[in-house]
Image (cartoon, rainbow, N blue to C red; front, top):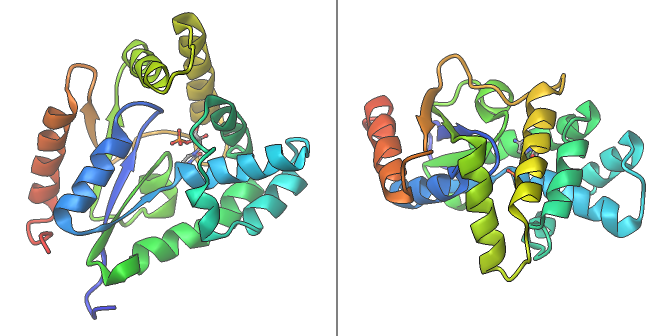
Length: 220
Ligand code: C5P
């Protein structure tokens, strides 16, 4: 670990807004470590589903406390069934508390002795890393996000229906935005990037411009 403080880029936003692609690319470009924090909630959900346990706080908290780094490598975390349970356990304060120190540790001491970290999720700028050097809120209209999700599902060979994908996305947005603990809201000092009409290339260019303005010395 170098003596200088690790730099932190916080990226929040709703599902399928393009924040994961953007975060991974920024991290690669800057030589930073990357953490997809949604995977933590998905891994808790996968453990609960696997155990056949109900979605109730004590079991969810125990699953969160038992998480190991290898849980994040599970191949079954990407499905919408897991996402739905993830957004339910994510509304439980005891689950969020159990996952907080891992995320903060990752940001403070990025693995691989990297000079910084990019974390993406829902509450990175507001709760996990309120002192982040750069905060982005990546969003898009729910219609555009549902279409992207539909395309992704079909590419994976899943027989998805547009109206259902849209409805599930609206329900997940509502749960994530209206929960009392760490709701999805842009931090006051976050810069909003609306990707409704931007492809991945343009979204990256827009984000890089903001990052370079806020962190002129960020390059490794
Ligand atoms: O980002 P992803 O869609 O994988 O996240 C799955 C769910 O995990 C979200 O719908 C949200 O409820 C929860 N989550 C969260 N806080 C984060 C990351 C994800 O509440 N920082």
